[in-house]
Length: 403
Image (cartoon, rainbow, N blue to C red; front, side, top):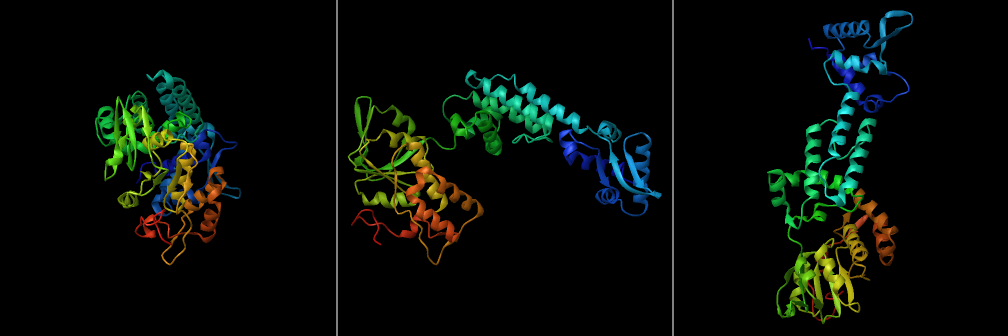
C-alpha cells in the first residue's frame, strides 16, 4: 500500500492552490472527497479503505477535518485543511511546507543582494533582489527564477554578477568557458539570463550583447564607395569588387567616413545583398536584419544629405526591422519594394504576426506604410513577401527591378 498516498495528494493539491502558493486565503482549503480519491488513485477497494484510514488518523491528530453528510456520518463529503494546520500536514508526510519553501526562496534572494556588483549596477541589483524577495514571500511570479528549483536559482544568481563584471567584447563561448567552465552553458541559460538582466536594468540590457557577450564579432557587411580615415591614411573600399565586413571597432576608430554615393540602401537578406552588389550600381549597400551596433554606427556617421532606403521582406518581421532601423538610427529611412504582394503562393499570418502588425499600425514612424500593413492584416496573409520572389535584379534602371 502506498505510504500516506492520499495525504501527499492532499498536500500537493493544496500547494497548487492560491492559499498554498501565497499563504493567503480568506477561508480554509476544501476539496471534494471523491475528487481527492480520484487524484490519489484510491477510488476503490482496499486502496479506498486505506485512504479513509489515513484521513481519519490525520483528523484525530488535528492535521485536517473531514466534512461528513449531516444525516449519515459514514459518508465523507469534503476534506478540509485549516490554513493554520498547514505545517502539521507537511510535517506528517515529512515534506517542507509551502510557507517554509517561500521563506527559503526569499532568503536566497536576500543573500544574493550583497554579492559583489560593479558600482554602476549595484543599486539596480539590490533593488531587483529586494523585489524578488518580496514576491517570493507572496508566492507571485519570479520569472525567470523557479519556485521549485533552488539549485537553478543559485546558478543564475551566481552568474549574473560575473556577467555584469565582464569587460570588453568576447564571443559567448569564450565567456561561457571562463565563467561557467562549460563553453555551451551560457547558450543554454541565455533566455533566463536575458530576462533577468532586462528586468534588473529596466530595459537597458535586453540581450547578452549589451554586455559585450557576442554570438559573432560586431561587424557591418557593406559594398560600394566608402572611405575611412584611419590614423593618417585613407582606406578606400570602393576599389573592391566584392563585399567586405567592417568591424565596429574600425568604424569607431575612423576619424572620418566619406562616400560619394547619393543613396545608402540597407538590405535585409544576405542573398539579395550579394546579387545587388554584383551590379556595382554606385550606391552604398549595407546588409542588415535588425541593425547591430556596426550598422548603426556607419549609418549615423554618413553625411546628412544622403538618401536612406531599406529593402526588406514585406512580412511583419520585415516591416518591424524597418521600424527598428528608423527609430534607432534617427535617419529618415524610406522603404524600397516593401508592399503587400498577393499571389498564388502566399503565406497566412500567425497569431504572433497579427499582433505585431497591430503594433506596427500604431507606430508613429510606420505611418507611410500603414496602407500596406492594413491590407496584409485584412487579408490575413503575408502574400509573396520574400525579397527573392522579385527575381533577378537589373542595372538597366534603378531600383533594380522591372515590373
